Image 1: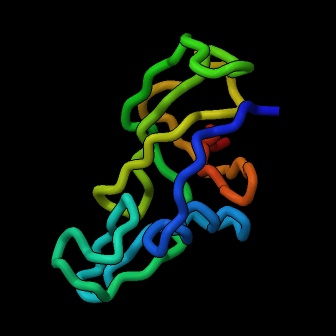
Image 2 (image 1 turned 120 degrees about the horizontal axis):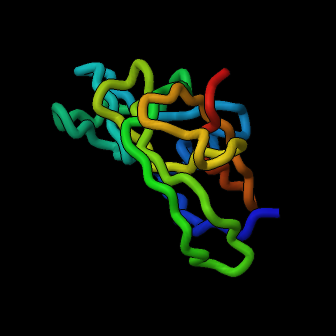
Length: 134
């Protein structure tokens, strides 16, 4: 059992992002006017200021853009070391998720590795984590 992750405060803007994993979906806000994505989730397009935005399921694959290995046990029962990475999402230009790379040794993770989303559920929140793509 993993220690509890910080729980986000759900609201109209971010609920689809934090709960989409229940259906296996990584939801990123898409503007219906300019076609650009916005993350973190907002109900206003950061590119054209349109309110014509809605969550859109994306592929959930990407590449590790940058990363670090954490050795500090910040919480009780937190297993270290672990990878914190910034993932550039496929098909979602300009959107990066800061996340953990899971299910592999930390020394097997490198810049440029292909990854895919997996979800860790804790009390109805589906945290998007990534594992190396085979």
